Image 1 (cartoon, rainbow, N blue to C red):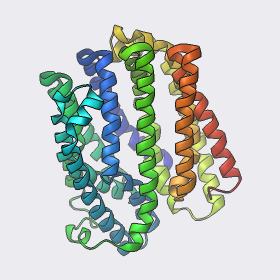
Image 2 (cartoon, helix red, strand yellow):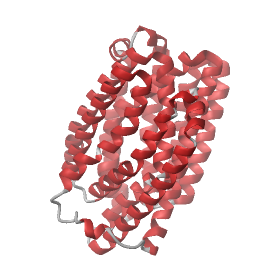
Image 3 (tube, rainbow, N blue to C red):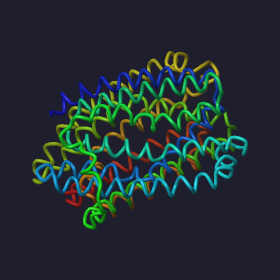
Length: 415
């Protein structure tokens, strides 16, 4: 499927997910406020770490090899069987650790031990979450965009209903439980949509781990774990830095501005995941890769710039609509945050090649280095510019990252 057709179909899913996110955003802003918003941000960062350790880090690898071995079904099944067994084993181990350490996690992330049961629910949900992630990775590698899109649509709606219902009756605690359960429940629509696909036979997913597939997937595990550990930990440290300097409300303002970026960039990042990653994984000619990169840049960058400008000029209306008057101080963060968003997408178009080509060493080094740079720049800029220094650091970090990606590409290190 072409980039334009994929983007249009994906836009439907993103529009629905966007609508769900906007409703949810407003609901949480009213019910938990800026301080609660910061707590939810911390929980979601830890959640992503635990899911990745449970096998979620293999998703990109499953997509890559499903697309790469499009003409060899048996090699695909060996990858899928291996990924499934490794993911389920990892999810059980992580789940046991989370249950044992629930009170510690609750005290560290949520500020008190009374809500440790949130992590018990998360532990129980992990196997379903990683199975859904694996199935969607296969669908993505198969380029079955319609199934991928509708599965995400149903998952978004189910997640919204769960979070709204649980938050309404159980407050912040209910929201955290719902955030744990909604990705697990999303496996139901995925199973329903793929039940009649010729490649989906349960017996073909059963069997021993394939050594070669495990070795191939291990590189993606390393890359995934690096992102999973480094990025959320960086966000937690920055959030703690902000909380120390400007209080928990200040952290909530930054978290809210970051959430806006996440929401509108979904259109771009999901298109890159659904179309671009499988496409560049199957390309074997350098010139064809360059042409694909140019095509994506021409399509993607103008869209990001236009949306970013729209958000900037209507930022007061957006704050009022998506949040409450308590969040109004965040308006000063928009200019640099949106600039950083544009630079992020510009750099990610090249950075995706690191994943598609399994350039583990370059990926790990750049992830660690630029996460450290982001935190250090935030620490320095906050001292000079206050809270605005954090999005300034974000923009500066991705400018440097873009320059690094251009250098690696021109030097032929990404081919």
